[in-house]
Length: 64
Image 1: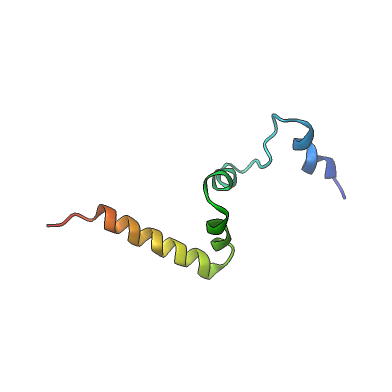
Image 2 (image 1 turned 90 degrees about the horizontal axis):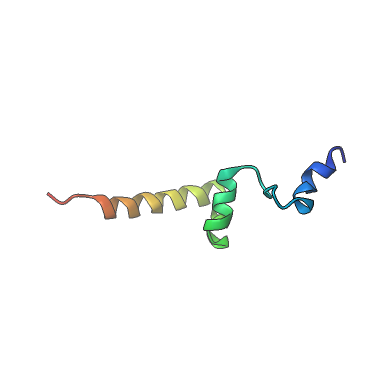
């Protein structure tokens, strides 16, 4: 495999993060595994985002 050492270099040097993608690293550390599994399908992510939108709306809607 070409450049294989680049893929595993983080194992030898603790200053190198496992992933260089900050968003991926954020979700890896903050979301439980069950939520991460929802992101893997189109239906799963849309359902999750719909729930998030409804939850946000309920918290932030102003009653007149």
